[in-house]
Image (cartoon, rainbow, N blue to C red; front, side, top):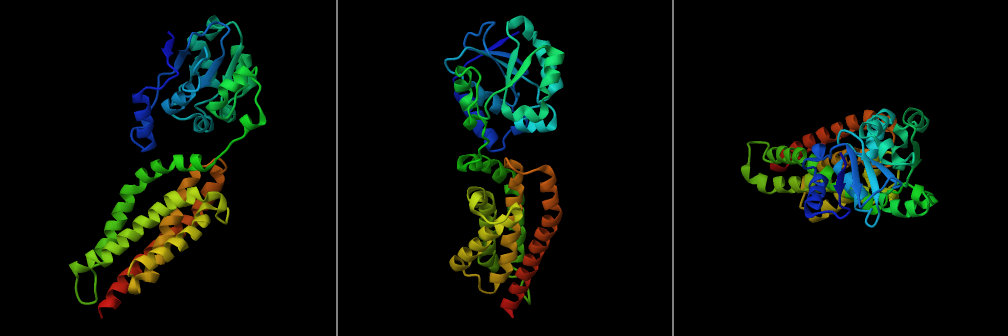
Length: 328
């Protein structure tokens, strides 16, 4: 059975995209695998292949206005094309199986399927040809180029083959990271808030509204700095490792917060806290980029995470010591 879909997204689709960008229901945002029709495709119409992650599916179909095409959706377990190719769910076996399941050879007269370029790591084109009779043609990196690609006789320009990771791309994934880590950072802020009342003689609740407010704002600022400023400034930050790239941002944030907030003896206590949080959030961004490898990320984590933990613990200890020293 072929499901007909519109190239124009509805408000529910837009709302769904906003929700998954905010990490709401992201792991269950999927469409049914199978064959879909956009426009009025015939037996000679192109066949595009996509993942069943609904955001990927919607981004593809919204670029197909005015075209009559088939979309073959693979079961990638709700994962986008590039990640699914790396995991193996957007792979040779699934593609061959889906071609046979929908009876594609009976629906189209040609024997070509157009795959996203970023699916290549999971596909053995010669095996697809051998097992299904269909030739794999790799389309452009971005869905916005698919119409021009088809009109050009399925010939891609160098620009269509280029993987870009510009300012908008980097910031597009920021909301997910913020929403995912905000509860953990909030708990850390509360812990630092509680430590703010410790003095050399007793526990002073009034300090929670002075020292506590300062440290809470510092934790929040470091969190947002590592989550937003590092991705935004990524090409210009020195160093290769993301945990190192964050140092400049952390130092600048420390300088700004020191000048804005009345930190007194807490100045040096906050430096390791800020560096720890910004470094961790920056390192966490590596999974969103187009140029990091799994082995490289694991290697960085092995040395960076212990240092980040040590910095955070050191900062918390210095924070308590500063509170005790300030009360004596």
